[in-house]
Length: 128
Length: 394
Ligand SMILES: [Zn+2]
Image 1 (tube, each protein chain N blue to C red):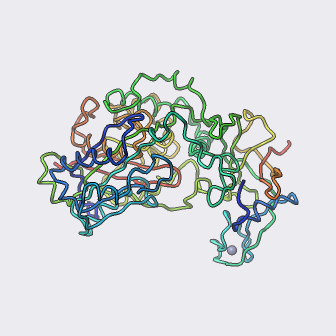
Image 2 (image 1 turned 135 degrees about the horizontal axis):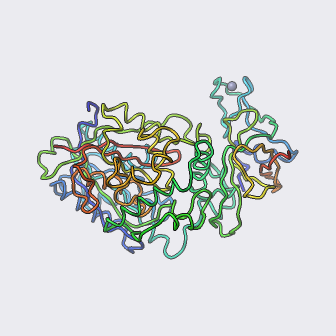
Image 3 (image 1 turned 60 degrees about the horizontal axis):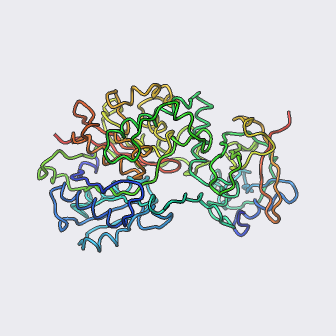
């Protein structure tokens, strides 16, 4: 599980109310990820956790076969471009779909996996 | 050639035994390689006044780092004017670049540069666990990967490759040529670890690691040490063989140095380093006679082919199709010692050693015909890249 003790703590606990949040610049709205208290777009230093839609597009993915952690199941690791700011790519697991049906470019939406206090943001295909 | 690179040459090379589970101490292997390189450069241990290594004695993973500079300095009782070891820089060749800078700046005259791995022995009969596997709380950079069970660079680079396939139609059959070419060349390298013939069918039938990477897309951990001597250019005339001149280095890193936030995952920071290297020389990609490009995963070598301009962006698949262009007798012989895929993961320095051997015409059965004069060496993958353009002295 990720730490909740760092600047990123809000990101990992955000899903408690079902909403994904990223650090946003108070002055210009740019999403700064991973979270840093400096806006590379406008040099602003005031930032706050900012709700986002949780929708995005699957930029790329891989189906892992090698049992690095000894489990041995197939699982999908993906990179999701956020609707609000596509250069933010969230590394995640793609769930709710057979690994053989995953495609680059799929519309996806966030779904949280409850590990209270951490709510892991995973993504599933948007129902057509 | 007019940059600082002109001040230095690679005057000598050396390499220990290379193999699986040699069961020998990393410092012992390093001394083997160092003494061979020092003698090859026409020097004695007392002549060495600089010491440089990648990644330094970090102990990040068992067997990954080899001995740090203090251990080597002490073992050889070196009297040093300059020393450096570290891993934050332009990939593995940063230790060579640092040495060239030190010689150019007048801080040292003969720098021993080495890279040692004992990853095979360190793994014993077991498998290296995934990076971060079993860590209860992930912090720092790992918090973004281990919770999603991204536990290997294979997973990251598989996503780069998948995107390349999506945008350009690159196929597994094309990518296979990197592995098949490496295996053919390895059969001519007495130190290579995998030399049995490998067919396209074997490749396609091998087990999946992380789509689209199969077993034969992944390099193999070994034990071994490689050393080179970076000397002041004037020393070239005191050596009884051709030396490798450093025509240009590529050290740039532009864009976000992040596996997932890099702007275009069909490229790597290799594109920054390569563009930087070409900006420092009048030579052009067509002048290169032999290429030694990092193949920790097969797609990395394809990405380097594109970054260095041997083919256009997205065109590496068609470029290597059938394997003829990159074969020993082709227009751009690639990874002539078998690369890391079949030769073993000497972590960048096998490529450097082989490039110098080829320029000197000493590569034995796998010698590229026609006296190669220019060699390109690309190191690194993911958010790290560094490259060298080497030429042969008369
Ligand atoms: Zn801003």
